[in-house]
Amino acid sequence: MIASNTAIGRLKRIASFTFLAVAWPGPGQAAPPPLPCSDEIARYCKNLGLGGGRIQNCLKEHDAQLSPACRAGLESALARHREIQAACGTDVERLCKDVRPGKGRLAACLKAHHREVSSLCKDTLAAARKAGGRVKPTP
Image (cartoon, rainbow, N blue to C red):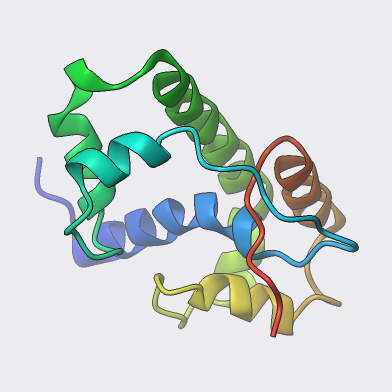
């Protein structure tokens, strides 16, 4: 099945939701723990740039070599992604519909509109962050 340009745009937005939790500011954040796939990324994907799903595709290609911790981390990230998508999708469509996903642009858009972001989205992002999402330092 071939996706339309609109569907592709939505998929890109959806893929970005996973990273909203990592970029959403949180009070008094400590240094984040290492990612569960850090070793695998360093070993198999070290020369790949970020973006475009390159790291995700690389990890898929090396599925047989992934540690149990990495696999569990990926499953957890997918579950978190689905929760964030369900909670924040309407906010992204309403507030950031013209923002191109990637490089933290959607997170920056939601941050710029923080007073307008739904409580459900804010609470879901905070819960994802607390459950193990990484947080980028705010400038």
